[in-house]
Amino acid sequence: MVIPSTRKGHAGSRDHFANSHHHGDEPQEEYYFERSAILFDSIFKYYAAGQLHRPLDVCPQEFSAELAYWKINDGLMSNCCWRGYNMSASLEELVAPKEKKIELHDRSLRSRIHQFCEGDGSLLSTLFTFGSITFVLISVIGLVLGSIHEFQVAIYKKGGKSERIQNWTMVENDSVIWEPHPVFGYVETICIIWFTVEFIVRLAVTPNRFQFLVGIMNIVDMIAIIPFYLELGLALFGIDVASLSDIKGALLVVRVLRVLRVVRILKLGRYSSGMRTFALTLKSSARQLGMMGMVLSTGVVFFSTLLYFVEKDEKDTPFTSIPAAFWWAIVTMTTVGYGDYVPVTVPGKLIASGAIISGVLVLALPITIIVDNFMKVSGKFETVWIFKNEALAEYVFCIK
Image 1 (cartoon, rainbow, N blue to C red):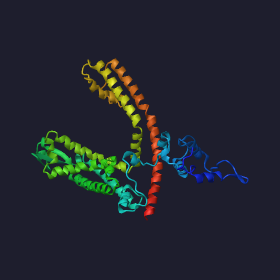
Image 2 (cartoon, one colour):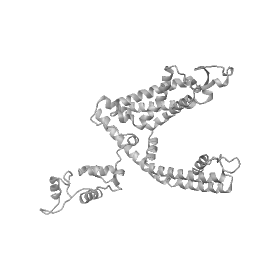
Image 3 (cartoon, rainbow, N blue to C red):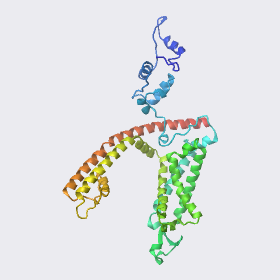
Image 4 (cartoon, rainbow, N blue to C red):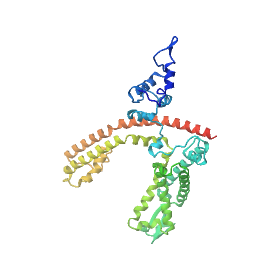
């Protein structure tokens, strides 16, 4: 099989290989390849059968260099070997859409700022990343401390307005709510300013703004800052957020806005290799997790139904319906066992024993697969991280 676009398919290369091995003064009717036998075996099989496979005991980068030597496109590799070979994608690309790659010769100011924000290995870029992590931690710590009663102040609601009071015992308790100390509000404002500037700069210098906006980590960044500006917008229109609890349904909206603040801790995933490794492990184990969830759901419905019909006639039974027994089945099959709901009859206890044993089996079976995926992902991430750092170092060197 002759493929003209490859080195072996080129007529001049064939003549070179054919005449490179002589016995005496006359050339022999044979080819001589001074290449690795392990690597060339796959190349030879490709020319013979038309299918390209990678040996499992060969480094993907080494095999890529061998393909480059023979001028064979790695996209021709069979599907069974492509997944393990394709290690060039970083973990950021696996949890977000691929962005347009910046060539090394692109030295524009925009590309430099983009590399700076993504971490180009320079001192200033490292300090920028450290500053982002610091603001995330400060914001989360402020959110946590603001929920402690000792760090809260009393707010007196009067109509549609609310005001801070010093002696809250002088007013009715129903009109007093507790809010974090204003210091936490100032800290949050400073953190939000940093998050906003960082997001705008990233958006301005990214090669593809649409892919940037639909990226998971960038969506997390938006969710982290949107609640603050929604509350600020309500304040500008004269609506006091603290007094919205008197309006039906408005309290839920306020709580949702405040709960969304905790999403900021997910911003650490941009800078934490451990969190990205964990996210990629879940992504690569999606099939096993889906299987476990399906079997677990089936078991919950099955054992809840059995327990309901066995226990429903008992006095003061908590299993008043099949959905009411779902909670018991979930905590039992996941081996948590809170003990708030327990069967009292002998058949109910036998059913509970079956649920416990089934839950252990359901949870144990996918664990080995998930652990194996974690080891693979961890090893791939370390390799990708090394090559990424080398590429960034080369990029900085080219700019200088």
